[in-house]
Length: 367
Ligand code: ATP
Image (cartoon, rainbow, N blue to C red; front, side, top):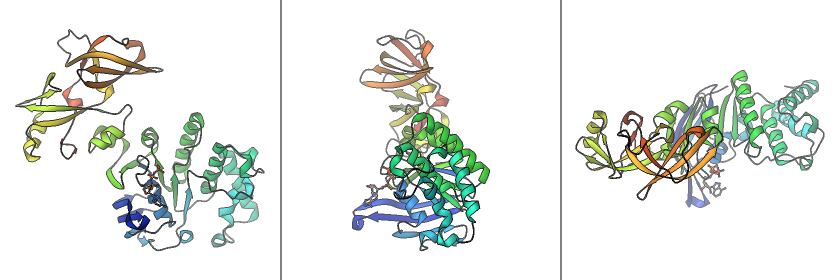
């Protein structure tokens, strides 16, 4: 187990043409399950490769506890890695692939042959690949190969697990099961785990805490609850939460905000005091989550905005409505049994305390 620290780490590819990571500073606490969440190309795999020693930093330092590991070889770092692409040994059976990390020369004599076989069987059972132990990788499906790759990382108890989208190729049901299993294993062993994913629901459900990475920069670090409830900027607000937060361009008019020029909302004092500091006089970005909007009758005094239902997307118990007003669209998440039909006129109501306010120039959170 170990704390992992990245200090001012930068990484370029193609002779500087592509900047994959820009001055990243991160501290991953000992024994925690840490998710690195970000869209494709954000720099997640690069971060894992740098910590594993598969790639070298251009500048900055990496520490494991208080030991600097920036220039250590991969096999000197005591981490176990599983990538989205499985990288299994094609000529070796699943059993041999799983046993391989335990037989590495650096770990000679740590494991007897009997202990190796017992551990391999244990992991194979855990991952539901026991019946595949004598097959070669080419005789497996993509999802089965991915479980073997994961097993090869889990077979050891290193100082840290580095998982790069490790269950991306599993079907939805198996992915759900594997998430639960991974979390259980991690809690049992208490091994520091860094897990990358582009799937915000996966990160929210797995992480003790997480970082949002975007174009090689950290946008926010925090617990899933902190990030969901207080997104630091518009990027995070839109990226975390499904469907994404509605962002309404609004004008400030004295003590009020005018939403799309269609409705007035009183401006909270805490936000008003921030406006002058942030040198914003006129406009604001107001965020409201789809599940914080209530449908009311369009003739009701409670209706802040009035519009027409353009689409209804039914997702079992919940439905997502797209409501249009003038050229604007707002999404609402609600119980399917209460959802109106396409084309109906509706009123939208929400509380000012459920709104998130962002600077329209920097897109940063105001309170
Ligand atoms: P994904 O979710 O698609 O795997 P990612 O967040 O893991 O994305 P990285 O793979 O770390 O992102 O890539 C970060 C940036 O660096 C991208 O612009 C990518 O194209 C680039 N990149 C990564 N590896 C290389 C490489 N070996 N040579 C050139 N560019 C690279």
